Image 1 (cartoon, helix red, strand yellow):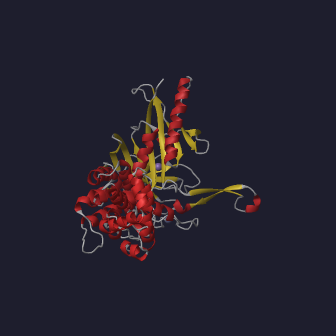
Image 2: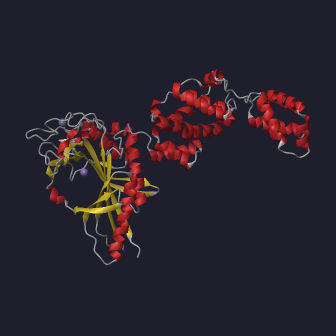
Image 3: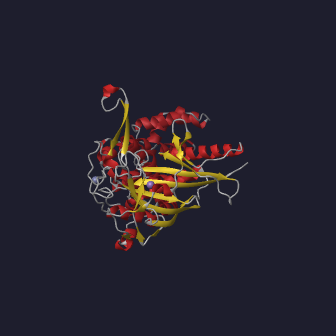
Length: 497
Ligand code: ZN
Ligand code: MN
């Protein structure tokens, strides 16, 4: 029996704002000292009043515009009532029937996944479970609460159940993360809990009769999103095969056991007793300059991909790396623009326009392999690079023109990375210049052939490995500086004359 999977995602992302959602406390996800960024408002003291964080609203509007949503004319906040130890007010201020953004979509590998809504709410505090308890001698475990995160602006995006596979769900989440980062509205780091996914999963035999929906929570990595959905589709199919019923429920994902497990029977919206937040007036979005927010949206990944491919003729893999590493992609384009405006009078290395395409390829190769591994080793961000785009451009031209060997290039790049120094200076300082002048090389080749008549005769008599001996002599005579490719060319030319 084959079943049709129906998958929808709910994705929460913490917004990168200075303050919290409804108070002036710092929104600092890196604060390690517990309960430092708190005040009576985010601690839920009675009688306190919330005020709306404008930047948070703008961030959600920006995300909505970037995902093709329409922005509601009037939006409002509601109370979602439930008890949880890390929810000091006993309710969360969220948005129920009038979310900020509606009816958007994202295209994932040609499939249109509709975005039902994006709304704004506040995050809860964080429970810290410790062994040993508050007094370590007790030997008992205890749960502590850190309210630094309570009241942090949280965006929630809900898709329509348009997703057809676990793989596609993962891709959607990855693409959304990338968009949030391009927009600069959230760091969306799943490892840090800045972005969290839940999936609604059901299967059915025919499209007309949707199956029973199971919600899977605790998906804290892209891998978990994919694995948990795969597991759940399999589990539900096995139940149906065995003639059993699927229960509507909320299930958690156990990352270690790679299994979902029942947490609670699914609550309905009415269980939360939503009602309009009495302390906040409806939000009139005409007070926001939508055109200005729109103008701040940078070129998004789905536009950048085809442009990079077309303009620079890069491979799909190269494009994907330069698009997902936004800063590196930006740096790549800065280097290209330096190359376009190459001023030969200012550089030792000369750039011939007909070699431009080859140099772009070389630039992408060195950025993606060599520069990226230096960045990964050091943990530095591409935006903090000491190498100016101009110096990187010169470096690539030097390689292309044969001024330096690929071995010397690695040494020079490492030096540039550490100090930001000019590549031609490093080359001179370290004596790394490569001899690529054919006239000069030919002179040495002739000398070596004259000095080794036996090896030359051996080669001409069919002993091909005599060539290696001669090439070795030439490299030794030039102290390893001769361009090996040119040496080979001249050597075989002179030996077959
Ligand atoms: Zn506060
Ligand atoms: Mn929520």
